[in-house]
Image (cartoon, rainbow, N blue to C red; front, side):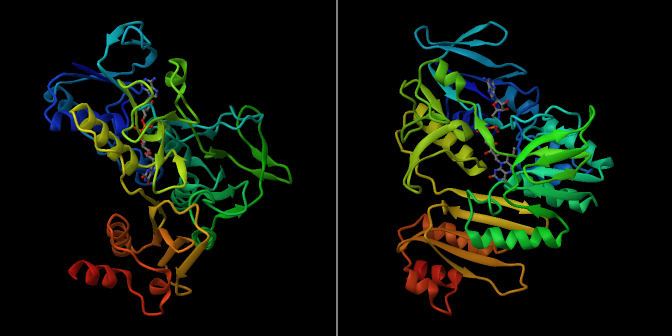
Length: 407
Ligand SMILES: Cc1cc2nc3c(=O)[nH]c(=O)nc-3n(C[C@H](O)[C@H](O)[C@H](O)COP(=O)(O)OP(=O)(O)OC[C@H]3O[C@@H](n4cnc5c(N)ncnc54)[C@H](O)[C@@H]3O)c2cc1C
């Protein structure tokens, strides 16, 4: 039996590692486009932008792990094509490998805005360790940075750049920060926080071009120009689903999978940032970009290859560190129609309970890790809390969960 894994990121690594942990004895080949052992990406927009963190601290396991576990690592190699009829993949080098199971863990790539000047020197993207090393180098001499996109990554980098004394402008096309994924209360909290850190934030800012003579000098929007010697384009990602699509597998901004992360072909799975699935935690199909999602889906597929059929049902949770603020989200809160916010003005902590009608969809917290963990216990259990209980003046989430679990 042979498992081929396309993609050596968080999800690809985890499926290989969980297969061996679960006693899988067949061949495992991990085909990884980047010429580096699998590593974690979250620090790339945070700690790794500081000067003192080496790549070894990003590695999920040292290189010796793969040989010890008989996991064949093909670094700097791609899966170029799937031949479903023959049951093989064709690598970029032309070599063919037979599979019994194929796991697509190809992640996503940055969306590059189709505007003039996007290829000027000084315009950066951030997805890989190599990108982060380039950005870290540029931040050493930058004086004025423009970040296109006020999502998690743009804002994490904004906080890191401000800590280095670089002047930062964030240009966001929508009318609030992180608008696709958090409630308006969290957007407002972080707007104030970033402005306090000295970041200039503009909304409704549609970027139309980047100007400069060989090197970036300014970013133009429909309504104005912002000087810059460094630009980060952080305007979202595109899932790498072309491999599946060209093999005739259904895609919809990601590879479509069923509840066991299986594509239409029972031998082929998709997990992590490239997979689209039905989640009972969301209203319909979702594609999630988080470590939790990549790791838990990988474990689900490993269990399936080992003979299990447990559907993927993990509770989604996310985090984002922006300067001194830790944002944590449990559940998918984007469909909320009512948000109950507990925040004492001036405090650097906040909790927001997000409801759709009477149902608690999720909980967003800032600098309240204990409440985040209590929220995870609540939402992954059968325990139920009504809006009236939560909105009662004395409500304390941690005390309430402790009492309920004792009862
Ligand atoms: C800067 C940054 C900060 C982040 N911060 C957080 C955070 O704070 N919290 C959080 O939960 N999540 C965070 N994330 C998201 C998280 O890192 C991703 O959700 C996670 O890495 C997804 O894992 P994956 O394996 O699906 O994809 P990836 O980690 O992207 O790995 C996919 C790999 O597949 C390779 N590949 C693509 N096509 C092929 C092919 N045909 N053949 C071979 N290889 C291929 C790619 O080069 C890539 O190396 C962050 C992401 C970034 C970029």
